[in-house]
Length: 416
Figure 1: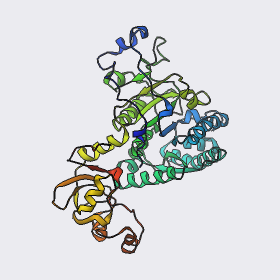
Figure 2: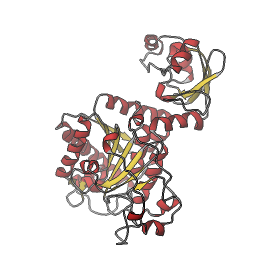
Figure 3: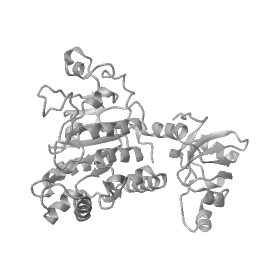
Figure 4: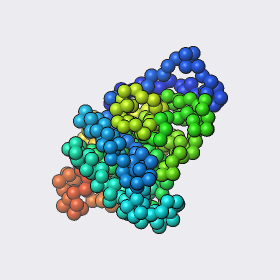
């Protein structure tokens, strides 16, 4: 994936004001007595994930999409897209739409009923997104994922590559949990956390959660009229987690708790996140104009966070020894091609971490390999055009893509 996060131009945030304060103290802060914290600008982000919940997208009474609201949202998406932003949508709504199309009674559904409703609703949901984006000349790509697709390395890489190609083609990926096959044991259960996983998987630099509420409050505002909106959270602490409330809508499976969990996932991976109201029309334009919302900041960016994870958190499963020319190419910021590999050791699968060594056996770096050990052995030392003839498939041109490669001592992050 491209270096999306490096383009934000955002400075690392200061130490959180909330880290040493309890909930009561936060609630009693006098804004006139505290230095205002600067909120980021939407225009500074290049790769953005927008999460849309069922309660916003679907009219709970009619069981149909709120057409005028969706048209306004897509107007906002189209403007960002025209300005060169890469946009991904994580959209709920398949079960709610299917329920409406099948005229199912209100009330809880059994697992198999939810799965069947999703099968009907997913067709409608994909058609709706395709049509509204198509009105702006934007292609839409449907991607259905399950928990394993973001947790198992091989499936994770396949999903990441598919989304990357859609973005390269200037299409908008529309992503949803595959409710037709996911069981209670293997599902996310809410699209807040799914959106955070998608954001980290794709190295997005901003995740926007459109919600029934316009941000994080010091207490659930429906129960406490004195609750105050927190405009910026610089670190997700235990005090921040304690403010999470329950879901407000019958169509919404996720409440504020799941949004805080999403914030932890996103910010740890270098992705900024915000919670904003989706009840208004043109919610993204409102964010750009400075409307009320809560920003969750991160001191990192997606590329450095991902490389830190590769360098320090993954156990290498094998070793690739490369020639001097390949060493020079890697130090110049290039990807590792099969032609530069002279030796393959270990038993590893595609997506595993491997150590990269130079001809003197010194470690050059670490990365996520694009081939399993058997195929890497077959194509080592060969030019990219030879790969198809050897493996019978075009495969990937790189043995390790530069975005998946850390050059330097183990655990080090190379300078950008």
